[in-house]
Length: 146
Figure 1 (cartoon, rainbow, N blue to C red):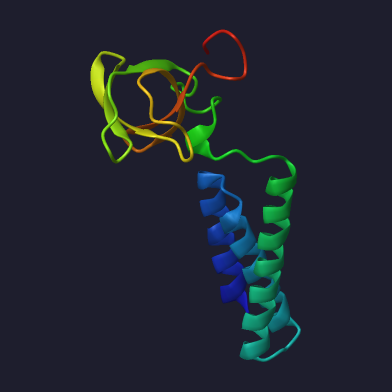
Figure 2: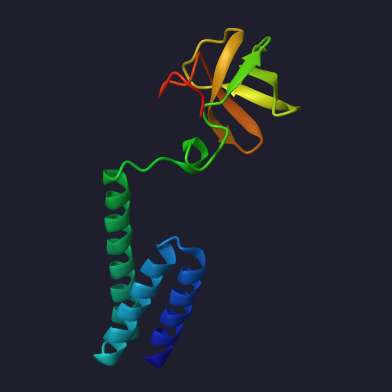
């Protein structure tokens, strides 16, 4: 029984170090398993109760993030400073990729899904690793760059 509570405390400490909320859900599941052990339930019920509580927490967290309009990190201008910045595309290849000069270096760029491949001014819509995902024109949130 105390093993469940000890592992739950370990996951709670790990959660405090990462701040993702997912380890908190695991810690809550382990706490439920420890409570089931304290109540004298079998190992199968201990594991099942922990799993159910963790999955319920995951569903609640998913719906909460969805209701708040969660934006993926790679396309969030509050996280990635490059979102919305302008670049000039000279030419696209047949795969929708190009090389652009940005911040003093050549970058790999790719046209965003369902966007026309035309040369000229584009803005950075998303950053995936070392590849800039571009859309034609100016950044739509305002007339000025970020």
